[in-house]
Structure formats: C-alpha cells, structure tokens
Length: 501
Image 1 (cartoon, rainbow, N blue to C red):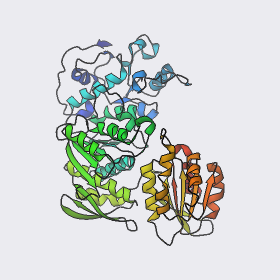
Image 2: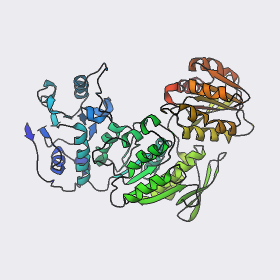
Image 3: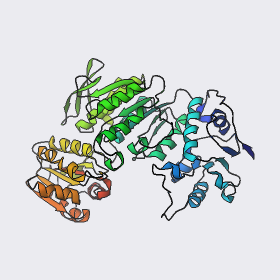
C-alpha cells in the first residue's frame, strides 16, 4: 500500500471517460495549495464523497470526517451528541465506503487499516480543492444550481424532470428532499463527473459560509426569490439577497445567472451577477424580463408567456402561479444550455411537485364525494405562504376555502412583524374557515380576530386531526401550510393515507 503526497503544479489531462476517474487522476489534478497525504490504492475509482451517514450515500464513496471548520461558528458536531466521529467512521466503513477523507489524527486508527485514505489538516478545505481538481479533468458535465427563499425545491425538481424527458437515457443528479446544506452541496459537487447534468438545491446557509475562496461556479445559477426566511442567519432581507447572490461567484466561461427580476432586492442579485461576468437572464411579470409571464389560468393550468420575443402557451398540471414562475426559470435554463426547450416546455404538463410542496390531491370523504387537498406541509416561509394563500384564493368560487396554517419559524427577532404581514394575504384568500397552529399564528389572530368567518386556534396537531376531518364537505379545498417543525405533515399524511376518516 503506497503513501503519496504531492507538492507540484497540477498536471491535467481531460478525461475521455470522466466516470472512470481514479484517485491517481485526482491527485495529479490537485494544486499545490492543498496539504494532504494519500495512503492506499491510487487506481481506485473515485465515485465522489459522502458527508452524511446514510447507507445509500456512503456505499462506494469516500467518507468525509467533518471537522469543526464545516460550521459557520466552528462548532463541534459531536458535542452533546450520542454519536461520535469514531462511531460514524466505523459505520461508514461497515456500510461500504471505498475510502476516507480525515484529519492526520486518525493515522494510527485501526479502523483505517487497509483503507484508501486522504489525510489532510482541514477536510472542508480539501473537499473544496478536490472539486476544483475534478473540474480540471472533465468537460461536458453541466451543473444547474438553484437557491432562493421559496421555490428552489420545486424548480430543481422541474428542471430535472424536463432534462429526463428530453433524454430518458441521460444520467441526472438531483438532490431531492431538501438536502441543500453546506455538506450536501459539497458532496454533490464531488460527484458531478458521473452525471450529464447535476441540479443541486443550495441553501442560503451554505452560501453564507466562509468558503475560503471556493465558489460553486455552476453553468447556470438561479435565484428564485428573496423573502424573510431564516432571518436568524441572514439578519434582514438585504442580508438574504447578499448571501444568495454568492451563487453567482466565479462563473465558468459562458456561465449564466437566471434571476427572478420581480423579487425584492433583485438589483443586488443583478449587480453581483454582472460584476462576476455571468450572462444575465431575467424572468418574471415585469415587462423588462427576458422571459415574461403574461397570463396564468389556475383552473386550466394554462401559461401564456413571452420568451425571446415570441409568445408561447403551455400547460402545467401542477397548479399555482408561483409554479408558473418556476417554469420560466426552467425554460430559461434549457434555452441557455442549448437544449430543445420547446419539447421541455411540453413535458411540463406531466410534472408533479415533490411531496408537501404544493401537491394537489383528491381525498375521498366517508359519506361520498371528495375534497381537494393542497399539501404545502413540508415547510414554509413568508413568500411560499403568500403564494399558497393566493392559489387557494383563486380556487373554484363555488368551493369552501379552508386553510390550516402553522407558524413560520427561523425568523430571528422578526416573528411578530412577519406573521402580521400575512394578514392582507389571508383576507385576500376569502377563507370560509381558518385553523391556526402555533403561538405566532395565535398572536396574529388575537390582533386580527376577523380573518375569516370561522377561525379556530389549536394547541396541538393531534387535536386538529381529531376535529377537522369530520367537518369537511364534498367540493371543499383545504390548504395545509406551515414550517416543518409545526408537525402539520401529520395532518397531510392522515388525509393522504386514510382519506378524511
């Protein structure tokens, strides 16, 4: 078993088969700014890194032991935790990791005997330099990175859906289920050489991290919206925009920045994209947008838009004006990549949003008939809450409109003002019945007692589950929306798995 440490400028040969990238290829492409020692088989295929302890993630990849540098506040991951770094390392090896990236303090660990190991003082710095080395080795693999206060999960899913429809045989990497934090973002970047397209969702927390001169550098970078989300981390709305704009840093040649021109602080996003030299593409309802939404019919899902100076029409089976906006970001991406965007546009009719992200479902009632469930229970921020209420307010006028709203969390010191700001949107939805969960929603209602003709506040989701189903009638439209920690997913699951019984 050889030990290898390199201290010379990288020698790079573009790989004709990036999916056959070896450790030797990676070592040769690493520059002299990174300190490391490799012990093991240099002909081992490098299939990317894993930073989360999940069997499917770990198997056949290099497991990264995350040190304190992976957190913005340099916190110890394992302080006060029942697990330990050694325990996680042992589990990763047991679950099929083909290698390890860890600190030099593990050199004498019996766990690593016979393993392929990169020893390095900072595993996050090494991971960033590793990604840069891989970029030197590959051509033709493209990354579309999406961030935003609302809409990023649905937009990434929509883009992945269209790419797969355009080429069913192509390999696409898509981080579903909100795996968008720093360690996920970097792990997905280490695997892009194995996919024709990678479509990662990137959180604001990842973009606000001290990257030490590292940039994501996607071929297409998208910002869907700026809203009062995670204000505890970003400070204020301007801070959200500044952090999100980091997605435009150091674009590759011909890299594009796709920006919702209607969103607050879009000028901050545009300025950063232009200063970084990215090709600017805007979308929205503004007459100045490159891709302009001109009309949307909620009943039919029909979208009318101006794209590149031409008027087009297409249909979305997934309902909501916000989804029509997301579709413009998707079409902007396809066009910029030189793909058949008209065929991609046609494929949008079969797109279904991820679970809990605005899915519409017909739920049978015990006495016959059914009601329509709008499931937005996965998470919430002010922008997504307003969009969901607007969709409910545009639903069939003969239907009873019922909203179940839970607290929006992670707002720092802005809880009261943000929840109060929702009052006009609730009024505009013309609700027949409103059910509120969480102390912030309750406080909003106390200051505004006439939000709907029927308003009820609930202490627990369990109480709501025991009451609400029996009150529903055929034809009702029920919206469920709240931050994940409010537990409203349990109500949605109750309806979807057992109807309203």
